[in-house]
Image 1 (spheres, rainbow, N blue to C red):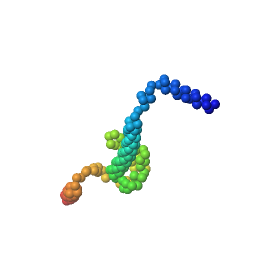
Image 2: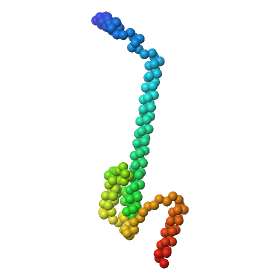
Image 3: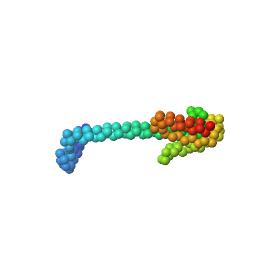
Length: 158
């Protein structure tokens, strides 16, 4: 049985050789194969590197977005005159906050309003003055503006 199988296999292979185009046309030179294979390996490695870089960028972007949301929460709490930012910030559910395309944080005002109603002792009472945060470019400008404000208040007291 083994001999008959060998004979049949040999006959099939010779038939295939006769029917198929020459072996030279189907084969590529080894140096060409090696070149294409090396190119494929380099491309796969470059793809892995780019994928890793993209993952790092996405991770960094999420961290920056989270820091921006925290900053906006702290600013909103300061404007609402929270006595202890850390305590009030702990009551905010950050999973419900979402950064919109226009730079606002959706859901923040509702949470602050709810906290302010349920735990009003965490906030100072409003004195009717609206505070505005103004960016200052240098420390001298800040000192000058504080000095001017103090002079103005002293003049009003006299």
